Length: 296
Image (cartoon, rainbow, N blue to C red; front, side, top):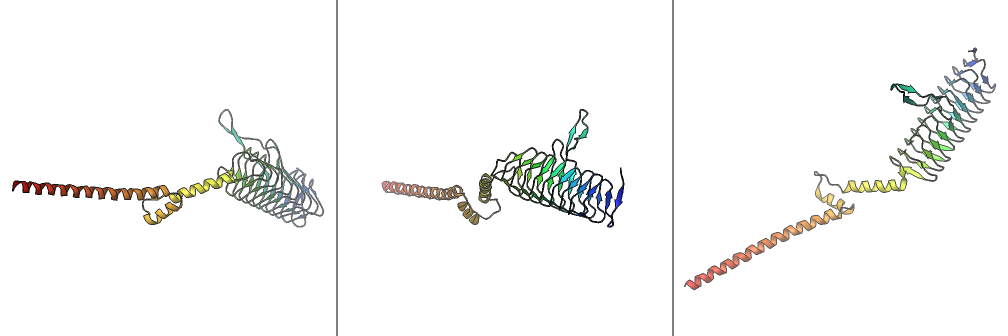
């Protein structure tokens, strides 16, 4: 197991760890066996650097960070609460229908000039390393699953999520609360709108929106059609005059015109019926008067 020593500021360092003399370790951080801390790197309080983890030069690692099974490049910023290199979410049923955890034996490779927001999690791989490419910027509360490969640079906003084995190209942007399902490949220069879920491969230079996500032009047409349909719908309790105007403006011309035609038809039928009744009464009166004259 080896021995740990306590530095002057109460950092706990394994005897086999390699910590640069120019690195700064805050109180109560722990550096485990065979870990490497580069020149000019700052490690925050209560952070744990696991066995065989390497952190490059001029990095800033916040408080309460956990680094396991990973390699961090140079000039990276890792904010407080980040967890890198934990098990991915992988399970299967054996022949007896018991739940078995799939081994997660690979690592997380973080490139240079990467920034990872507070309380984000990056899982280590099962069949390939999870890779975060150079210049990638990750916001707070982001989940990146096992085997994800981000070519970089990429920009991933808060509460976004990448399921296992997703591949992202260069200059991909994920807006807040968006996501990509497992084993999907996203090309270069692809944008995914907020609250959208991409469920299929996305070619380069495209913009996606909706759930499931589709080309943004198709999504806008679909959204406009739904809004127009909602505006043309009249509930039983709504007043007629205002709704008739809305119907006429928002595509309800046929309903409006049919209503007018129906009213005109009713008035016409009433007028014709009244005219026929008066005509019959007049003929009956003429016949009665002619009979009287004949009898006299």
